[in-house]
Image (tube, rainbow, N blue to C red; front, side, top):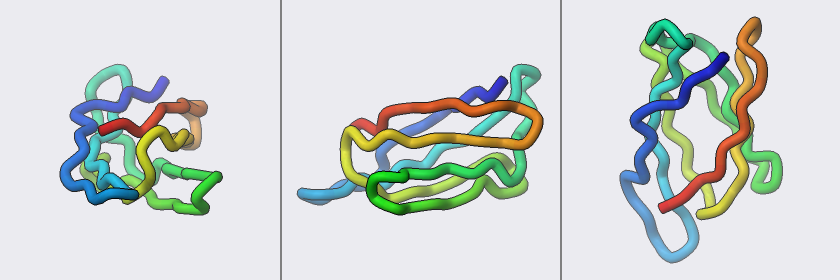
Amino acid sequence: LLTLITGIAIAQDSANITIKAVIKDNNGLPIIGANIIDKVNKIRTASDKTGSFIIETKPESILTINAFGYGIKTVTASK
């Protein structure tokens, strides 16, 4: 299973927020190459070698996190 930790909005303007977060497995190890997708706003990124990612999106957007072998997790972006 995927665990999304330390997800924080680090910047925002009137329309968007920037989210910086780390994706780890249940053992606390970073998940490399997880896909983070906001299908509504057509934004996509992937986690790096430390499991970290940054994505700019709209508040209340639904983000889908998918990593091979770990399944899918859906989260709501918030301020």
